[in-house]
Length: 484
Image 1 (cartoon, helix red, strand yellow):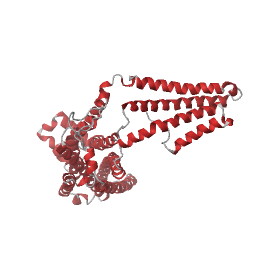
Image 2 (cartoon, one colour; image 1 turned 60 degrees about the horizontal axis):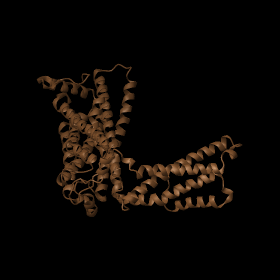
Image 3 (cartoon, one colour; image 1 turned 90 degrees about the vertical axis):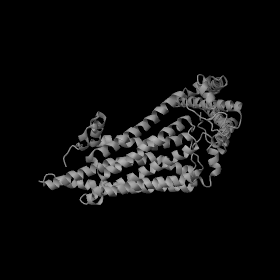
Image 4 (tube, helix red, strand yellow; image 1 turned 30 degrees about the vertical axis):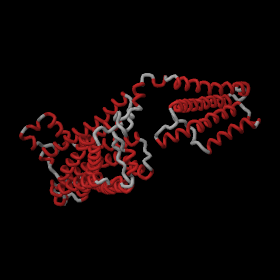
C-alpha cells in the first residue's frame, strides 16, 4: 500500500502547522476545519511512522527493522491511508451539504457530527488494518507463496541469490506469454527463411537480407528467449556462470545484427525507390552478401570482445560482485560501454529515420506523377515501370513498418540502460524485465508483419504447411499475383 502523502521532511512540518493552527485559533473551530485537522494528522503520521522506513527499504532493498516492526509498519501504512480516504469522503459530504443547502447546513453539520465522522474515520481504518495484519488473515491460502519469499535460489549454498517468485497463477500466465513469444520467434522466422531460400522467385538482394534478419531473430528465439523466460519468472539463473556470459553475448550480438540488417535494408529500399532504373546494377546479390557478412561479423566480434574480456564492468567490480550472487545473471555495464551501446543503437536508427522519411517523400511524388498520367495512354515499357515503382513503394512501406516496430520495441530498453548506468542502477527489477521482453518480442513481430503485408509470404506459408513444398517443381512456383 502506498500512501499519497508527500515525502517526509519539511512538508510534514506543514501538516503540523495545519493542526496547530486549527486547534489553537478559535476562529477556525468549525466542523469542516476539524475534519481538515484530523486529515492533516493522518498524513503527518504517514510522514513520521511510514515514509522514513519505507525510504530505507526502497533505497537499500532490505528491511533492517525486524519482523514485528514490519507488521506494525504495514498496519500503519494501510490504516493511515484509509483514514485519509475516509476523511476526504466526509469532507466531500460536508461541502456538498454546505453548497446545496446552505441555510440548514449549520444545523445539520455541527461539531459533534464532525467529531463522529472523525471517530469513524480513525476507528474503522485502525480496526480493519489491525484485524487484517495482526490476525494473519491477509495471506490465507498463500502461505506457501509467503514462505517462498524467504527462499534461496540454491538452498544451503553460501552466497545464493534470494528467490522472489510470483504466485502460481502469475507464473503460469508469464510462462504462457513468454513461451508464446519464443515459439512465434522460432517458427515464424523459420518460415521466412525457408520461403526465401526455397522459392527461386524470391531470390533477390532485398529478400536475402530479410532472410538473414529472420535468422538473427530465429536465433534470439532459440538461444536467448527460453533461458531469459526461466530467469524472469523464477527470478533465478540455473544454467551456470559460463552459460550466463554466452547467453548475454548472444543477446547483444543478435540484437545488433538485427539492427545492422535493418540499416542495410533501409539503404537498399532508398536506392530502389529513389533510383529504380539503376538499382539492379548497384544492388546485386554479391553486394547483398557483403552487407549480410558485415551485419554478422561486426556484432559477433563486438559482443565477444566486450563480454569475454570482462571490459564491460571495468570500474564496477564491487557492484558486479554484489549483484552476481550464485543463481543470478545480471550484467552490470559501465558508463563508457553503455554510452557506446546507446550511440550504436541511436546512430543507425537516425540513419534509418532519415532514409525512410526521404523514401516516403519520393514515393508520394511518384504516386502523384502516376496519378496525373493515369488517363494518358501508356506504352508497355511505362506500364512496367509504373508497376515496378508501385511494388517497390509497397515493399518500402512494409519494411518501414518493420523498422518502426524495431525502434519502438528497443527504445525503452536503450533508454533504461542509459538511465541506469548514469543514475546508479535505480530501475526496479520488474521495469527492467518489461523493457527486456518488449525488445525480445520484436523478434516475433517481423513474421507477423510480413504475413499481413506480403501476399507472397502468405502463399509461401500455404505451400509449406500443406506439404506442397516437397514436390520437385515447388521451387519454381509463381508467388506473385501479377506477372512482371
